[in-house]
Amino acid sequence: ALPLRQAIDALPEAQRSRAREAYDRLMAFDGKLTASSSDAALYGAFLHESARQIFLDELGPEDGPAWKAFVETANLSYSAQADHLLGRDDSPFWDDTRTPQKEDKPAILARSLAAAVEFCEQRLGSERKAWQWGKLHTYEWQSDSSKMAPYLGAGERAGLGAIKGYLDRGPYPAGGDHTTLDVSAYGWGQDFDTWLIPAMRLIVDFGQSEPMIGVNSSGQSGNPASPHYADGIDAWLKGRYVSFPFQPQNLDRVYGNKRLTLTPAR
Image (cartoon, rainbow, N blue to C red; front, side, top):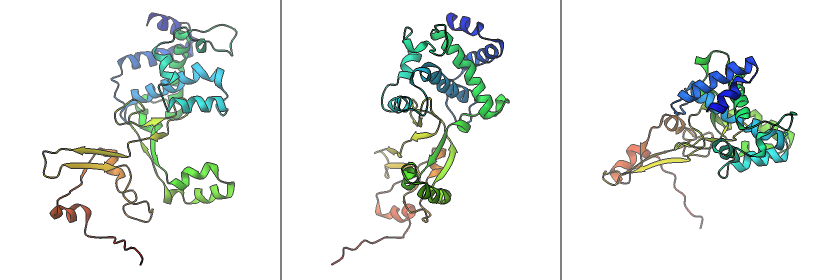
């Protein structure tokens, strides 16, 4: 920690005060990535800024293929971002190629701490109590049509945009990240939009007469006009579960008495 504190002390005054604030808060952070947490917002901003401070000068610009591949690769395996934060003290990526001097790990992390506070100030305002992880990090349930929009023509994208509110749900504040049990992964260094969530949470207790409880992440139906298209979201966000009964006498109580009968054509 001493080299990092020395690197913080060497920063210009405006950056130094921000970096000290970030250092003190993150050292005291309880590690709980709840959507309402102010420290979690700062922690997420630090991860975001450190990835960019370490790698963007070599792999940028951020709309280029190298940076996009870098962010995507981090979604698939143990990431270079984590690898450098946890070690790699002698990596050439610690040097900022845009400056004449040669930077080291403490210097880049000191900059990242300062940049994290500045990022939160710009995105969430100067009032620290208003910072919340869920204001940066969000869930959004997109239809398959909306997911295809980037690959369509301008006219088709405009048409989908006009009915986005009908097809999609969200954004909602998200807790967690790519490392938590309740996973909510996002593009580390790119944005905070969640791309990976548990499609279903399921608990089976064979000691109970009805052993299975669970919830899926949106709704049972894929039809936006159905009342069951998104009626699971509220329970999913609040960590609630519903029973999935198997005994005949309990079926109507949970599933209702409406039936869809599919009869093969003759």
